[in-house]
Length: 201
Image 1 (cartoon, rainbow, N blue to C red):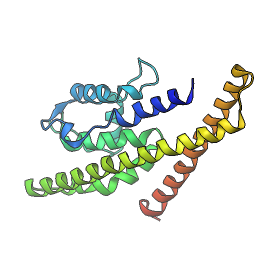
Image 2 (image 1 turned 90 degrees about the vertical axis):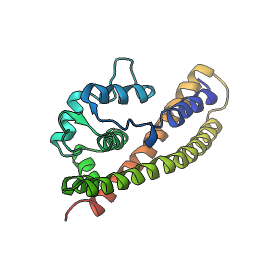
Image 3 (image 1 turned 180 degrees about the vertical axis):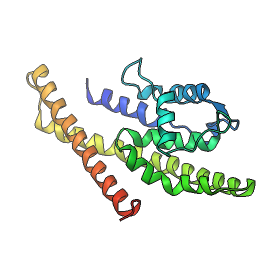
Image 4 (image 1 turned 120 degrees about the vertical axis):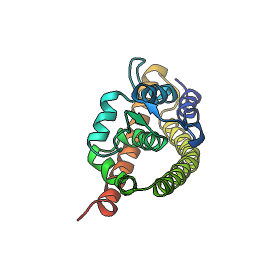
């Protein structure tokens, strides 16, 4: 696998699977419809074909842990889907407790809504929050592509052409280790910020 192949994989992951707010159905969905929607839109994130992005068990677990509110008459609103989408982006890195703490600032407002007007206000706030995330995600993807390109360039300098098979594996080992180091550093930073800003002392 050469550098172009790596960047192509990154591009496919970063730019092809974004779900915009207007892509989310405006009608309430049953559980099966929710899982189908999520799994269809995020299929490129599957490591194996049989993997599921979200399952009924996951959604029930998120509800049990108060990450998303309970369904209404077994149906899930657009607000539920937005919270599930945010949870999808968080769940591979953060614990359930960290996700709950992070999203509680939003979901507690959902619990406090007592009228149609207050629910509309909550929906508008959630829409703005999600749109901000999607817009800034594009910027992050662009920066990430540039950062990974530079990382590849630096790794290549340390592994000049020679025994191609041997060098390629060593190069990939170092490159993957650097990816994990960056991911771990950002994970630790995220956890520290959650502890400082979203958890009661």
